[in-house]
Length: 348
Ligand SMILES: Cc1cc2nc3c(=O)[nH]c(=O)nc-3n(C[C@H](O)[C@H](O)[C@H](O)COP(=O)(O)OP(=O)(O)OC[C@H]3O[C@@H](n4cnc5c(N)ncnc54)[C@H](O)[C@@H]3O)c2cc1C
Ligand SMILES: O=C(O)CCC(=O)C(=O)O
Image 1 (cartoon, rainbow, N blue to C red):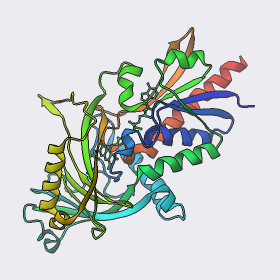
Image 2 (image 1 turned 180 degrees about the vertical axis):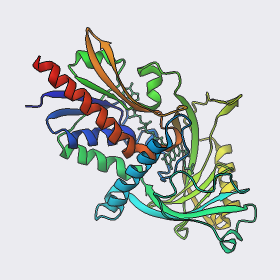
Image 3 (image 1 turned 120 degrees about the vertical axis):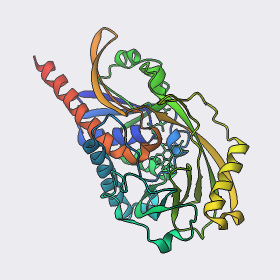
């Protein structure tokens, strides 16, 4: 008999990873993954899925390093196993370029990717507009494969799937859930009334260019070329304005913009001229669930006449694939605390 009912709201890469971690670690709990949209209709399905990251300003770097390291370890294990093709997880090598020499010559995650080094002058020659570059091997995670793979593993661990929009957390309490895990991404704006989460629109193109084997990322220019399993992803856009030092975004358009597509293709062709002969397969748009700092914490809420613990795990912005497994493991620790409290209180 399953003694504690846990519900995870949200089936993007963050919710699916979190639900799987809980289901595998707590076999005596009943775990339900509930969402309005599943793959292939989530923001996560739009992601290029490359493991890199920009830091969040107010979260200790050591914690962010741990998240990166855990995700990398998990995905590298898959990439090096016979599951790699089904899970859509592969190694990806290439270059990250800078127009001028950056103050920080190494990102905070440099020791967790493979073979991180500064590019040689010889390598930089083909990029005359860039003065500095880094070469390394990271992981690329194709969410169109990875999300169904996570879902399959979740079901195997005894998890249940429910397709449903949650109007408010009270209804989950009324349905008898003992612990609520909120992985609703941008949906947290309405679900938990968090106006700190905002959409940052991103558009990408998929092209057929099987001759490309290396990624190229222009850090300042928002331009990237990521060869993958099925196609090459070209990006990107980051539709956001700065009001003073604060980002402000109100672009909710989900349909691809032909002007953006043209601009992306132009920028990518400047970096990699062979793309002029590539066949464009399509364009897609996602709204990054951005927040100054990702929220991984728990609180106790009064819902429908009883106190219910809620664990939050949302607001990963442009780096949700990268941080998904690391933050899921931290959310699991918080869920374990809630379950422990629930069981010890129940005995009193
Ligand atoms: C163009 C683009 C490229 C990107 N590339 C990368 C990359 O290379 N690497 C990387 O790390 N990240 C990348 N990202 C960022 C990444 O896509 C996001 O950080 C990630 O998808 C966030 O995952 P999530 O699970 O939090 O949100 P989502 O994928 O948006 O999932 C949210 C889930 O919550 C559900 N939900 C919301 N509200 C409710 C509700 N009220 N009731 C029920 N269900 C609800 C939704 O239906 C959905 O299932 C990219 C993003 C974009 C747009
Ligand atoms: O920025 C990148 O290079 C990777 C893609 C991404 O994370 C994004 O577009 O948000």
